[in-house]
Image 1 (cartoon, rainbow, N blue to C red):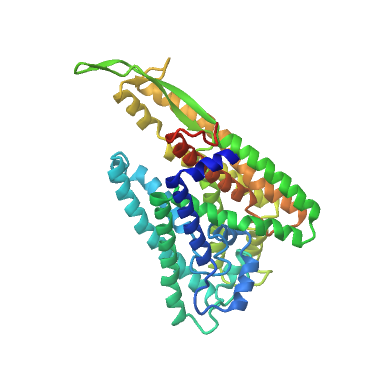
Image 2: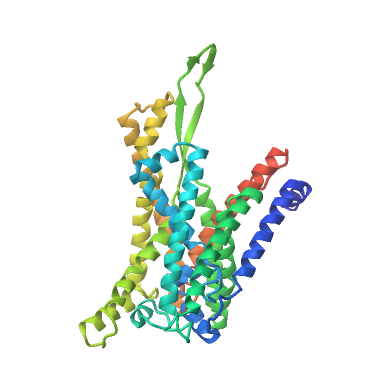
Length: 440
């Protein structure tokens, strides 16, 4: 390991890329500590106490703690993640986007531009909703549903200070997008993933420390051991893949013999990554939004009983109903995402047009059925794996009576996945210069 680090430092170009990436991440962390103007500091402390679990906890996770302090990067990279998912889904529905996906680098640039527009639109909507919900302490039913305190961040009213905060939050999201693109172009690569990685890693130490603050030493040790086990499992599963062999027939092009080589289609065990967890957490927020339209009501009334049921069983992470719903939704969304990300019909048609075939399988309909069956089989263990990663810390923290570190499994899953990809990027740079990399 020390020799590999020395090899990295010897290469000026690679060393500069890593230093540039660290500099951008440093700018991001500084911006995450700069609070938007005009917000009540006392209300921020109350918001910090409520932004640890549920939907607000997920929002805070992807902003690197910037949401709980309502900084200029409070929206984090979440609008970009949502926009990317939307564009990927629309690519299956809208033929024009599907054509762009098949045009290589030119089409990808256009899709990236569209993703930026969608990101800014979503950031504007989310900033407006946040300012009006938290600005004057309104929406008491919503606060009750998401288990957050009713905090008026703008005690003097939304006008005019709130209308300054909205563009500030949108610009913060745009700057984060710019940071990610800078890392992709001039840094080590995978800029958006690095921004997410920096956001998630920033909250892990405070999550473990919050367990110690409650004098839960035994459960702290158990959480550390569980995290080590999760890291080992994530590394094992993230590197695992099913390789479907593909053979291309020889053909004559002019005076040259082409084809005849053997290759394979790599199918990762966990193709969807952390996206099903994001989908499931967002969907569990819908009951809170619907309940907020019922308004405040007494506990004995029908509206009050509905609100109490949603609060106790649907959105409270420390009960069996929430954990079961969360796991089922993660598995369902894993199948949904994989059905969009990998199209057996298009893959089989592409193999046929290139003159290839899977040994023992006829081109056409049989290849489509074979690929679909292989994807369905490999999706189940991957979906169960990420569901277990997401709910195991919930179960342990439920037993410990701690609710301040709800997304521990998700944090580790993201951190290890991005770290492995970063190691691959460095490995490829070292291999180009005849150095041995981390992954031997």
